[in-house]
Length: 111
Image (cartoon, rainbow, N blue to C red; front, side, top):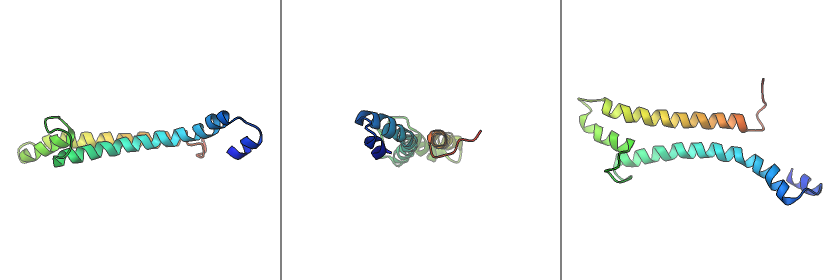
């Protein structure tokens, strides 16, 4: 498409905006949601292991690590942050999948 537009005499800026940028926005937005979900999982895992952010900072990984001591008496201390991580990551994955379906020009639009 770029070579055809260039052969027709379309300016470089118009090719960049209408051909390249339009096709790049969708994959970048979808990839950003997946990267954000991965970053949340990485931060929670590192905080659980104790090598993440400062231990005085409340994070879901730190909450799970501190709740391990009281697993016999209070299971909810681990379940609440674990469910929060799960719901957040799954929500981001579903949003990314929906963005891909909505913005991908190769997927046929059905009524």
